[in-house]
Image (tube, rainbow, N blue to C red; front, side):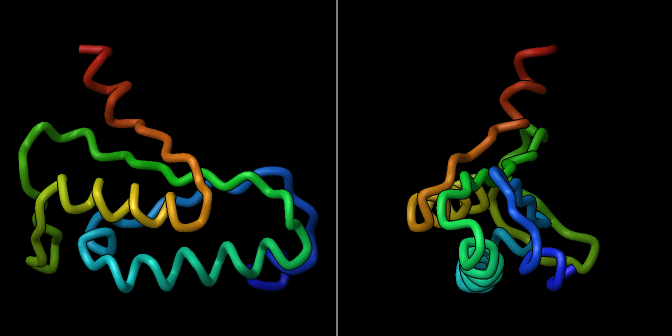
Length: 100
């Protein structure tokens, strides 16, 4: 996958992370920055989007491994890294709420 990232020209990139990783802002930030920096080497004008796919109305999340955090924490971390790298957040979860 890394060679494809390096060798292709892209107009857009959409990133999506597991919620458990979003709960650890430093881990999430490092991963997103690594990918975006690699893609921007050959695509300096690329538009970056980060998907926020949480659809549960519950206030907290527990992963299969038992790690937990609030959806607010996951959302805040996503919005923070998006601001740092100039990305747009796609709020899939809002569309799910609107459809009910």
